[in-house]
Length: 567
Ligand code: ADP
Ligand code: MG
Image (cartoon, rainbow, N blue to C red; front, side, top):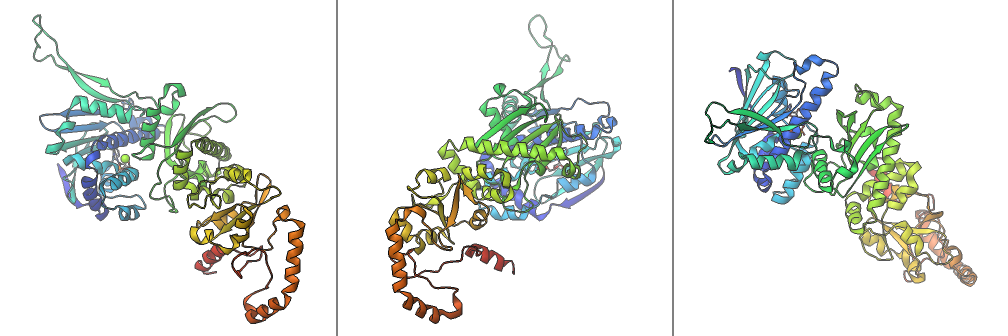
């Protein structure tokens, strides 16, 4: 081997390797899923690149993944004839973690095995999971379309450094040889490997094949030496899952595919698989995850769908097809509406993209509506992603009624901090004569719940929504009404209880106000510039006084956000 050099892993990789080896111990088998998934990606990439340049196939356009093992040597090999890597790419891809948010991710690791295992699974650290089962890994690769002499060999024991060297390699694509640890010998086994391939890779479109050896036998039934022939056998189903008719796909298939697209260990909460023909042709398979990714609230967090054009993989994280408030949705979009050479830049200009986006948005919202029928599952969804969905009314005016119906709140009906009351629940419980939906926004649930503004409402048995998420004031400034009833902040402006109050009550209040004019004036003088106005109110039943904001004034939360932003 020539031009050999030894390089150190990036610090993050070292940290990750260490953590992974220790925390994923009880989930060791996922290494195979990760390696097959990379091999399938590499095949997808070659197919895409070859659209413009057939020569990249080097005469072998039958894309495939091969898995071999050698029990005696204790090795497992995963090979693909996909795109391959150049030397520079090997060093970059197998020596660093390029993904943004890595540092953030590492910070979240707790040292608790189970929790970390799930996080790592979500992060999709892929290739490095080889070192959970191997104490040495050899990668041989050559980029499709290059000279045979441009092959590269990468070797490492996963302990801080790796070695790269130039090699001669006839085949393009990548071969990964795992030298199994002593206690991982179980994976060098035909039956074990086959069942893992079926478990994790049935839905992958590229065939995964494994060899078996045929031997001729003599009349006595003995094997004739020298007649061994290798026969490759396809192990996985190898049809893109979203292309199959719904009736052919089991729940388990859908769940396994989710884990592949979302890099998640756990099951999704629900999914929506649709094949749409006619004016706009597309197939979508969208999922609601059961847990939040670590970068849900990061600006450059990964979001969007895996985009295919006529079953050719185009790109990951195509974020143009779903609004930001549905960024937790994962899945696949396959369409013939776009051209195969579409790029991120072109996506931004294509009017068809907007049309598909609005169709997928409806699908997403409908999927949530269906999920809402299962109270327990929906509560899991809401606790995980509710505050993201609350961004919806501001971002998507057209769908705000639909979004509003999906919102869940705490309210004085239960006085519980669990946000589980829908607006239709509220409307159903409205008092006779009540025309508005009342709410209060505070810094914390307890502050909202014990606010003096609620006294009159509690006394009259009128329900008030208790809002205390950071985003709630922003949400309420974009939600004007639901089911024809407008929203009223009970801490702002004149309190109008409409027809709930009788004429007599109103009269009594006016009289009280008159009687207390003198007191009001004295308080006003004492407070001076600090307040706009002092008034007698019937808001309170127990407390003597409270502060009220004018109706169109910015609320406390918004003020604080603006102050923090230096305004
Ligand atoms: P991810 O797949 O999420 O990008 P991985 O750690 O699994 O992360 O892989 C890192 C990178 O290494 C891949 O993005 C890809 O560029 C490269 N890579 C890994 N396996 C292969 C392969 N079999 N063929 C070509 N490139 C590969
Ligand atoms: Mg990967």
